[in-house]
Length: 204
Image: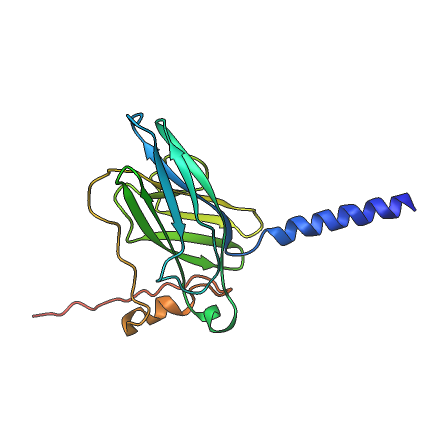
C-alpha cells in the first residue's frame, strides 16, 4: 500500500511541476542597474501593467524596493502570462512595466509576448534608454529573450536610472493594415510567420 501511495505522490508532484510551466508565462522581476552607490538611499515603486496592455491573462503585482548600493537591485513582481483564449489566440499580447522613485528617476517599457509550440519569447518596444530584459539577474544588453515552454521562466526587466539616449523602437500598430500579417499570429499556438517580399528592379 505504501508503494502505491509513494507512486501517487510522485506522479502528483511531477504533474504539478509540469502544470506550473505555462506557455507564455514567466515570473517577473523589476530591476535597476546603478553604477555608483547613491549618496542617499531612495525608493523605487514598480507598476506592472499599463493602459496599453492587450491579451494578457496575468499582469503582475505592484511593489516597492529600496536602492542603497551600486550594482543590480531587483524586486519580484509576480507572474505575467499571455491570454490565448478567444480572439486573443490570433492577436499579439502586449504588457507594460514602469517605475518611479523618490530620487526623481523613472522609466518604462512596453513588451510584446508571443508563444509557439515549443518556445515563448518577449521583445521590448518603446523602452527608456538603458533598458534590457534578461533571463537571469544580470546587467545584459538584450531586448529579446526566448525560453522553452517546458521551463519555469524568470525574466528580469532591467532599467538604468539617469541613462540618456534615444528610446527603444516603437511597437507596430495592430490596427494598421500593413501590420496585420505580423499581428495575426501574435500569441496563439502557431509557428512564427515571416513574409519575404522581393521588389523587382526597374530598368530605366
